[in-house]
Length: 173
Figure 1 (cartoon, one colour):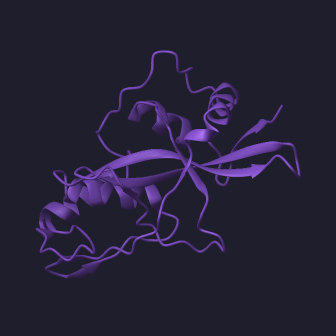
Figure 2 (tube, rainbow, N blue to C red):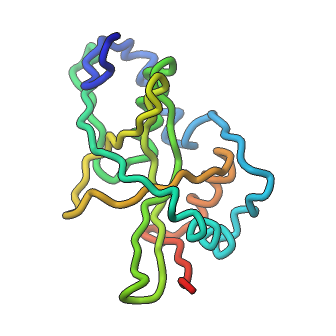
């Protein structure tokens, strides 16, 4: 079995460039199904749902990625997680898929609340393992990640409706 990473496969740069221009608009055309009991993406109700699902959180390992193409090597950019994950899933549709979700910042002991920052990672289809291709500048990259469980359009609308740097937050009981 061929190991997927680090990515160093040749790439059709024309198709890749076309994808880059499309991916910069919406996250991707991929749609995810979600549980019918999931509330509409109202920020407060949705943050409460994430708080109730804290036990589903996992630490996603960072993994450097390089994609070779005719003009050189593409590498994921810091602070561009949605874009990076979408590019990789589009480049390797048989091997990878995007997983949209939230990083967990647990301030229950200090502030009595939990905050959530939107984030995207990648899943290897054959193993189900998650990895984070986005270079991190934070001191502790081992935050919990919770899958969004929203269809792509709802996740995109929720994230695009947030101010730059805004986090979802929920008071812990």
